[in-house]
Every structure is written in C-alpha cells, then in structure tokens.
Length: 390
Image 1 (cartoon, rainbow, N blue to C red):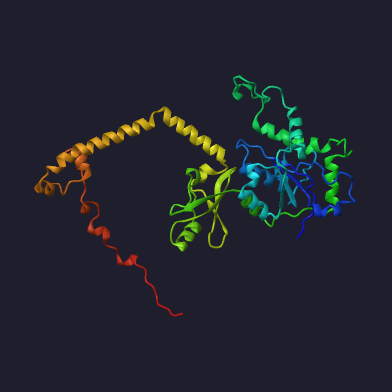
Image 2 (image 1 turned 90 degrees about the horizontal axis):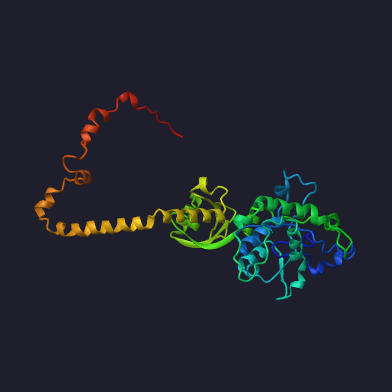
C-alpha cells in the first residue's frame, strides 16, 4: 500500500527524505516549491559519534509523534513531522551502507537512494542550516577550526552552556525559527508548505506498533544464549521465557540480539526458529533503569581507574603468588605424611585446621541441636481428609 508523501524533505543525520519520482505527477498541481519544503522532521544529538546507532535514533525521532518531545517546553507551535517516508536520500557514509540500515529500511518499506560520491552540492541545505544556527550560540565555548601547531583548548575551561540547554535551543530553532523563515527562491515558509501538503494529502501512516519501530531502530549484534542468558557489555539479561527457549533448543545457541543505546533496561533476543523477538529484562534493574550505553561505559571506566589508583591489580597478583608459595611449600610436607597420619586427620575440620584444636570454636553434635521430641508431631496437628469421587 502506498503511503502519502507528506515528508517533503526530512533532515535525519544527513539523510533527506523525499517522495518517489513516480508520484511527482500527483503533486503537479501543488504550489511551487511544495515538493521540497525544507521542514525538519527530526534530529538527534549524542556523544556516540557518527555511526549506525545515531542514524537509527535520528530516523526513529523523525518517524515518531512529536508530542512526547515538545510537551511541557512552552512552544507556541506544534511539530508537524510524523510518519513513514517513501524515499530516503542519504550520503555515502558507512552507516548507510550497513546491512542493519538496509534491514531497517526494508522493514519500514522505505526506498533508499545514495547521493553521488564527492558531490556535496546535491545536499547543501543540511550543513548550511546547521552552520547558521551555530551562530546563535554564545562565543564562549564555541567550537572553531583548529590551527596548525596549536595546543587544543580544554572544553572543561571554555564550555558555557549545558547539553540539555543546547538540545532545547535546537528544538526551538527547528520548530519555531527555521520553519518560519521565508525562502527567497520559493517566497514561502517551510511551515506553510509542509502544513498545506498535510491538508492536500492524508497524513502518513505509522507502523502498526511503536514497539516494532523500537526493534527496527535498535542496534543489533550476534550473541550466544547460555544458562545465564545473554551478557552484553558485562550486563546480564535473562528471563523465564529465554530459558524455556534455550531448553527447547537443547543447548547454547547464537542469535541476533538488539539493544537501545539510550536505555539498557532490556534487550531484544530473536528466536532463531520462528524469527520472533523476546523482550529480556536486565538482572540488575536498579542499575540499568534509564541507563545509556555511554553512561555505562563511563561508569566502568571510572571504576577501572579507581581500582588502578588503589593498586588492586598489584595486590591481587601479590596474593596469588603468596597462595602459590603456601601450597608449593606444603606439598613437600604433605608427601611425607604416612598412612597412619592420614587416618588420624580423618575427623579434622577446616575450623580446627585453621584455629587449632584448642582455639577452634566449640562444635555441636547434631543431637545437641535437635532432640527427638522436636521431631514428634502430635496427632491433632495432622488434618483429616474425606475421600470423594468426581
């Protein structure tokens, strides 16, 4: 089923979403320039760097309803962009050529078109728009091009605004500033062009469930399912359903596991037989609830640095060497024990061996702990049952 073409131009991590060429005749009667409104339908910023995770996250924001992002922020206009695009035009980044991104496009029934190599003038709007709004930032902490033989300035000393303020500012720019700037070539505003197209054509369809969109936008990796579940990033995920699946297969097996880098509270594990997905929760929900992958790696890095400062590795290695010396030194004495000596040690316990015969804590015999009277159950405590037939 063909979906309406309301996403005239969507910026999602250097990806431009446009309608199919076969549908151009349908829009011939529209206003000039309505085909490419320049309206931003989604953006995503993180410390992950460029890659597949950020690309899928930006795509998920572009497709999702926008009320969850704009409610409570005091915006005077609504964010119109929502729905599935027919065509996604991307550059030649490695993340766009990955099989995971192709699988996501196939699951959402989107066509992919790659721009020509080394021809940035085919998509100049994205970089120019971002560069324009960077000028609104304060000069303190503004990123600039590094010079030759220059010592880079530490961002801890020059940063001026928080990450949350940056995101809120960009949201206001993309919802209330950029859509209302008049384009000199089209003599129209992106908001009006996009809004008119929504009235001329029915709204675009969403997937049957946003849960499916979460699975498609998640980052996948092959993992082994064992008796302890799956263990990505040193975090254990397990459930009764996953163990039932493992027992039905009969052994450890490899399958595709997907996770959301923004929330490690659960992972998706694929049933290799029916290709269905299981939602497997974390075994440490008090730690992983709302935890992102970047935060988890930062916590582990900090803990590793703390252990390095206290000399944990050196202390462990020293204790291991002392243990080896104790057992190797005792080996020669153990070989000299005769059989009658071994028989004499038959009743010795670890407490007596460590503390000595006199200093060892007093041990109680079983009959000193429970007497026979404690095991006798009075007859009145046993309930009576009557037999009956069904």
